[in-house]
Length: 413
Image (cartoon, rainbow, N blue to C red; front, side, top):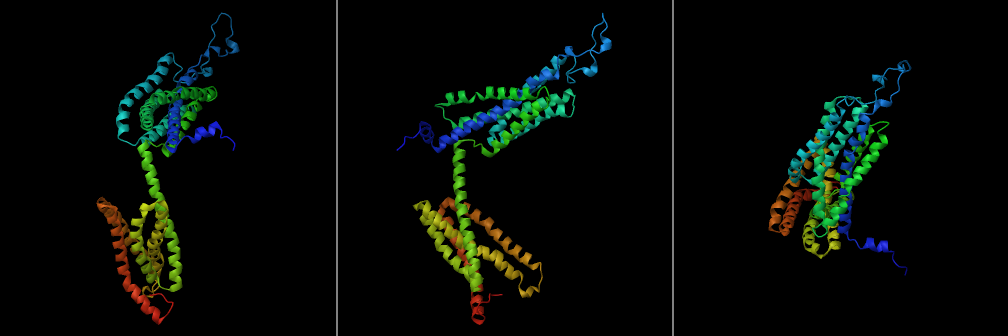
């Protein structure tokens, strides 16, 4: 047998939890990289907002000897309002407006972040940060020269950017224990340099031709990363375990529904062949009660028996439901006593489905109350509901049999 390559052996040595830890490490690394990436453009674009215009060409009429060269205002290459003599103070205002807002916001961010889901908090912060970063670039697109506009954008961006650091540090701390946290954090913290490098490269690529894109492109990137955060970030190991438990519960519910689809089709075919809808429902409900009891007993024997019993239970419970809410509703709504009233079918269907919704509301409520005494009590409640439904059908079953004796193959009207 050929030897297994070392790389494959290395990958195979990771279990599922380690893979998710690695994924969380990489995801949070990229998330905060995008934060630094979106902060970098202002330092690159400053040189474009106020250029050294001493190289501007003079008009031929001004090349008279003994006169100082005159710069034409229409040839001035700086971006208003940063073309003034106090441009250093104005550009500095861009920096300290962001930093002051960031410093103040950081005190509030941790307090707010404790009370909100990290994933949603971080997502909102990244989306709004992308919005304000793009707004700064749109100042070039829409030829905005108001200092107040740029200061406002910087202040707002500084506030929303405070959502990033507390969130990602909390997330990475939840996933990695204290034993190797120093090494992990040391590697992970390199996102600062990576983000600054990428931000400089992106902003530098567009700064000479269209400095607005130096902000818009990073803004779009951080907003896109916010969407990825919303879709994929799991805040902690316990949250991940809860997610898996919910997924298993969802899978079991899906199996129940699959059985319901096959029981629903089968119930419809049998009722059409026999012409006895009430009898078909009654037989399935009669079989459903012992099946529910069997499910409560057999689920402890493993996944295979549980799956099988779920499929059977789904068929026997959802079969009558499908018949009553569809075919029986249609039969009642088109009964000859209604004299062809086309709206009656809608009314009858609404009444039946609305009554069923009452049961759908009461069932989970009773299940929550009874589960405190043990799950056996919940199954007893379900079996009781099953027998009550069967009891209410008995009158129709009797009428159906009497009618069938007189006119074989005709359903009860």
